[in-house]
Image (tube, rainbow, N blue to C red; front, side, top):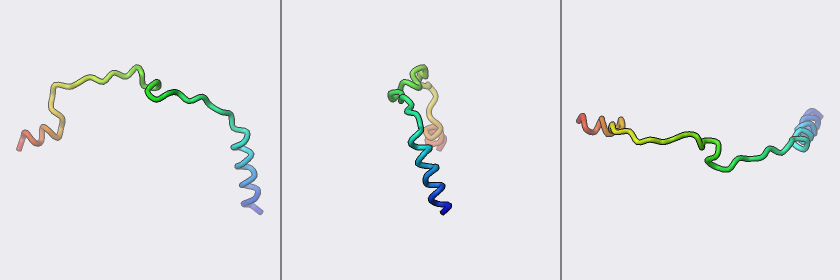
Amino acid sequence: MLTTVVGRISLELLRSRQAHPETAYGQECADLVVTSDADPAPDEQVALAI
């Protein structure tokens, strides 16, 4: 009986849920800028230290 009630409530919530517009890939991080670093990466620093 409890599983029936929980199942109905869950389905009711899913059906009443509003659709949200999705953003295209990359638009949420459009203001981020990737720059190169002149220093070697940490793994390269270890390789150079050996």
